[in-house]
Image 1 (spheres, one colour):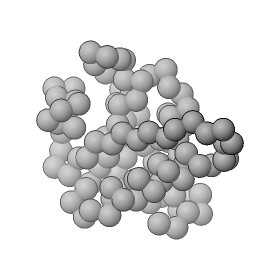
Image 2 (cartoon, one colour; image 1 turned 180 degrees about the horizontal axis):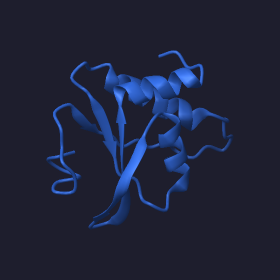
Image 3 (tube, rainbow, N blue to C red; image 1 turned 30 degrees about the vertical axis):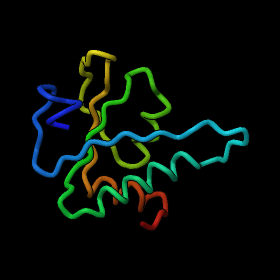
Image 4 (cartoon, rainbow, N blue to C red; image 1 turned 120 degrees about the vertical axis):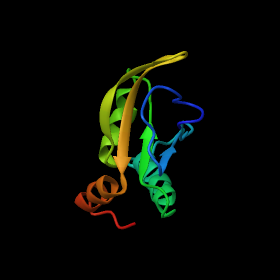
Length: 108
């Protein structure tokens, strides 16, 4: 994130990893599917021992993704201005992810 998406917008730390994920719309929505996707993606990112923190910057108006992010441990820090959007800069450490998933009874 310090070299592409968020250059100059936050103080990058060693072990920071940026994340984007896409989930296609479904004709038959499955309750909890998107949360399972983000949980699986986060587990894969944190499987690398060098990853200390995941950094995201969803659109400030995307309240659905804010709720998903919170469910897996992200903590919003502040709003930042990017050329394409106003974004909510948020971080999730390994410990925050593990605590959030354990609280939901999810084993990773």
